[in-house]
Amino acid sequence: MRIIVQKFGGTSVASPEARNCVIEKVKQAIKNGFIPVVVVSAMGRKGDNYATDTLICLARQACRNIAPRELDHIMYCGEIISAVVMTGFLQNAGIEAMMMTGGQAGVITDNNFMSARVIKVDPVKINRQLERGKVPVVCGFQGMTVDGEFTTLGRGGSDTTASLIGAALDAEIVEIYTDVEGIMTADPRIVENAKILDVISYSEVAQLAYQGAKVIHPRAVEIAAQKNIPLVIKSTFSDAPGTRIVDKGNEKSISDRVAMGVTHLANIAQIKVKVEPARTHKESSVIFRTLADESISIDLINVHPGHVMFTLAEDMADKALTKLQSLGYNAEVNHDCAKVSVVGGGICGVPGVMASLTEALSTYNIPIMQTVDSHTTISVLVKLSDVEDAVKALHQKFLLA
Ligand code: ASP
Ligand code: MG
Image (cartoon, protein in one colour):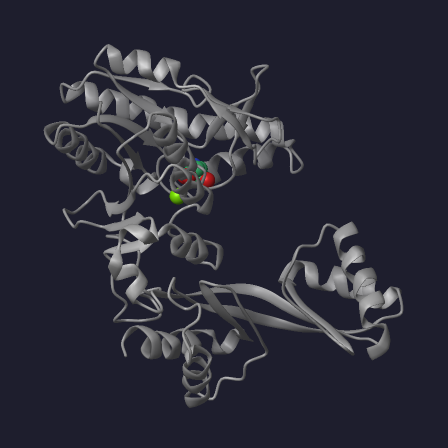
């Protein structure tokens, strides 16, 4: 069986016109010899009647502190409405279909409401529908505990559902349909000449997503990567081929390039703590334990004799600062920062990447507040007011050179 999972995001199922485009994509898959399994998100975006954000608002209007378990129930409704409507459209178009909740599709999770972890996927019911020649229309984002509680997988979790189902069914391919024609080298609102990428590796796209690009849920990428199932990000509304996400080893063009994208994350603050140089190791362990006990997650971590530096979410900065100062630390905060990252599977071991990066930023006169790198990413911390120029400068240097 050549299974294809086709996941359609909120804008792809929001209107009758959009849903007709979905029908065309499903028909095309069948024509190409695939057996499709459809996964849907809730319809539309914030403000639309049945969108996830709208449903959350409704519940929070009733009670500001409504419990995560109750929120999961109201959020469940979004995908259910979407799946029922989509199933109706498919049936009208002559395609036998049947909707399924996440629980019915066999997505079993723990009971960590609103960001449940998947324990296993048991696709018996999906398989039964496939044997009967029906197209399953699975509600994305949903799970169920072993004792029947409704859970959701965390915002943006429909992508994860698509990969989970793809992995459980040994799908040949998982398509993620959206309203853009693929993954771009930078945010086109900042960089006018940003380009759509034909192909990108699992690790590159996961980095892009973690570093702020809103392309696909990183969890979905990890799951597909484990089984080496290609993911394709493409538009519901055009015939453009989209961006293929595959294993690096399968594509020479991926290993040949140093960088493939520039992305950024805003709402970051930087904290610097001065310590006595000889006591840095002792003090840093107290500092990091203190932050951990306050459930504050940190990034861009530097420990140097005499100082400890890190970044954190802007809305955690004052809490962290107050706590450290109350312990007698000489700590200061830099608000309004952003992390700009150059991502590329070929960065590792290539001389001159840092030289190019600093040249590009110095041409635009952008001060670097901190840097960090990994085998696929180099990131710099800059002031928020410099972020657009930094993205443009690095895109120009690394992707258009
Ligand atoms: N509807 C859910 C959300 O808005 C899941 C998804 O769209 O992926 O987060
Ligand atoms: Mg999404």
